Image 1 (cartoon, rainbow, N blue to C red):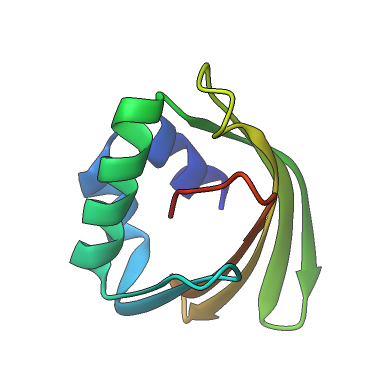
Image 2 (cartoon, rainbow, N blue to C red):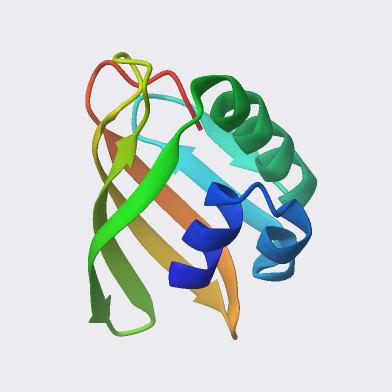
Length: 109
């Protein structure tokens, strides 16, 4: 998870993609769903670059085959920044599912 956050923060989508399964599913609890590595990368890029958003991880809690990640999204755009939590599932060493919980002002991935 730390490697994924670092890759996304540096816009290194080749590195980020190497950490994701081909069939990753990302749920935003506010209604969004993204399926597939390329779709995740395209959506993250469309969100992150204009917002200049950076993920800061505060805590990673391991539970069975999943992890819960608590952190925040920092951005100079006030509507974007704020606390976030990710529930992350794996297919072997690759990230296969992410459920994102954010504050109401979120319009991102």
